[in-house]
Image (cartoon, rainbow, N blue to C red):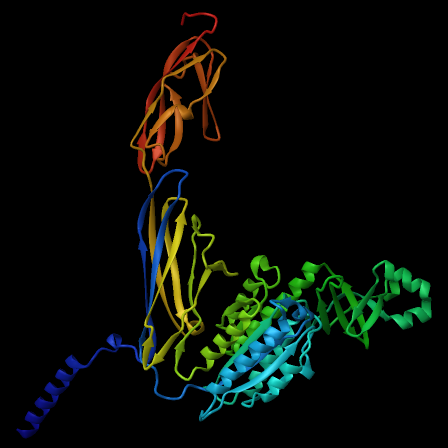
Length: 553
């Protein structure tokens, strides 16, 4: 009896617990997270023919949750510093190099301050570059002591070209080899003042090259006169620390097979690819655009490898970005987006603030949401204001960078971000816009959709004006139709005579333009067919044809 009572109580307990256990799908997120929303104002618009209408997307990002109480994860940062010759250019009374050195000093000061009293220290390294990686000006080992980096920066001089590829490759290798914990976050802060001009890569040759002959060797074998002929015909080039004559005789042309180390240079008057082969150098002359395309391809490969390692790439374009005159911010942004980073433009002394902002954000003692963005598609027929801060990405989408920093002092301050995006529509239709809003390179993100309906203004009525023409005269009929309202969307599909055998006039159409030509005195009714949305209008009219030499019909 006792066992039966106990079993009944146990069964009831299990049933009650089943009803009252909270649902996992209804659980509230823990930690830091965001909520987003989007609304259109207005959501539905009426558009007239040849006109445009506008709406605004109202977007909200709400920071929610609580920050963890533990110390933030340690970070590794590799500074990739451009010391090319253009860093000697003067801006606001100082060279770019001086501005950049001040920016680095400010950044290191911020990093050092936020690295004090940590249980696990942050670490830093430096890769300086011009036409290649500058070993003498770099610090390749990761260390929490930044004094060595400061010394290298202080002694740095500007010279050479601009090699993104191998400097980013070296930075990635430092971080890969130095990774000591899965918790340690890794960053590359890449600063450049120009477009890439140089690259080195071990890659397949399998094509024709011309032999490079050292100047002294060439002159001793063929004489100075022959050298100067080569020089003035553009067959002399510089490479590394040497000057070479480009061999152009048949026995100097070599088809090189296999994988070789190759040097790419798109600087003015260079535009070549040089391959190492059998202890000699061989050259392939190419167009500037072809060499540039090769170089940019190498850089994209490195950016993808960086992203694959979970490294965040923060880029600083130091120079005038308008029309990509000095720096191509779209290209830098494409690179950074692969590594869930951000590209920021700096001009003159503003580079100090940019470096400080990046260093403060990634080394903050309290958790922060930074690098905010709104990414969206823009359907055909929709356009943005020319002054919009949105920029077109290589994949066709658009992105707006949010200059917002949200600190979590347990809870977020400030907690809401609002953004208004005006959009203009030139055609009727249903426009679906997908949006992604996020922070920290997409670590915190949400997606939303906005659907806006642009309806064509319909025809309410249509009628012909009176039409009188002379024999031999041709008139256009389209403007003789009175459409109400005048800006209604419509298509004039047909105009036909009531009596097809009537010989008073003929009707022709070409590219939607209808004309009537008077043939002989007389008249006939005509009927048009106008399409407007789901409606069809059939206004009637009459064409009179008179003989210019007679008042009789």
